[in-house]
Image 1 (cartoon, one colour):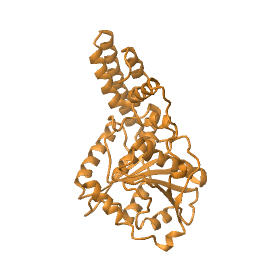
Image 2 (image 1 turned 90 degrees about the vertical axis):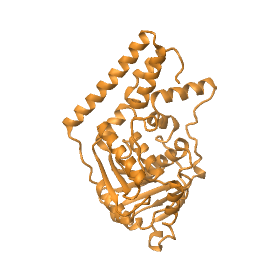
Image 3 (image 1 turned 135 degrees about the vertical axis):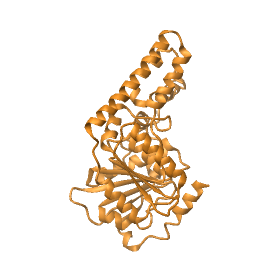
Length: 343
């Protein structure tokens, strides 16, 4: 019911396009360049845990198949772009928006705010909650970002990903996996805990960049009880994983709804003013994580050496789910030492 309600609310935001905004809005846009970020092997490397990737690769080899690096036909993919009337000094900013609905639309009232902030807005059609995450929603957002960066003068330090409801959860996945692309995330009424099989941590260099270079902004209605709770858990998980640059905007007297123009303005102001973590606290926090990962991997190694293969396999799965790319490449070596295909 919540999903149906969110789509209904979202649909009500578009009665028609303001003629004053039509000059800035480009509909039914087709991109030519698939780019590198959206290639299937690159998406897998960043958004899946090491053992999950190994399993996929093993299954492909066993079936005599190759990974389809470009599952989307861009000739059939439509995007909507909103370009501000004036470019800020230093270049445009960019907001890639992942919706929960299917139609590529600009939420009501957002145009003037984007104009004032110099933010280009892009969203894809057929990228709603019912679409596949890995073969559609994520690559569509990445393709949009890479093409616009090639076509417009955009400040790379001000490239953001955002979304609403299920799209907000996708935005968090993308921010976590692509900190070298997205410097911030606008999380409107949806979030997740990281360090799980659903939200695995990316390889260590990327995660370190996420810890220091990505601002997360949670925007949730105070009457949206379920997502207020998930936001709390998500922010707590960020703290556990040494991610300190987070902020929140609580939308008063609001349920599971798209941010208003006023809220968007406030959110963009905060995204454009990131905070830097305390170096000492960050170093201590990272050191503890590395110690924990090493201890878990050492325990798995001892179990393998003592012949306790079942216990070792279970522990490796737990490590893979919790630590993701932070455990690579050693987790792959230990899994291979079990002598069985990844599972």
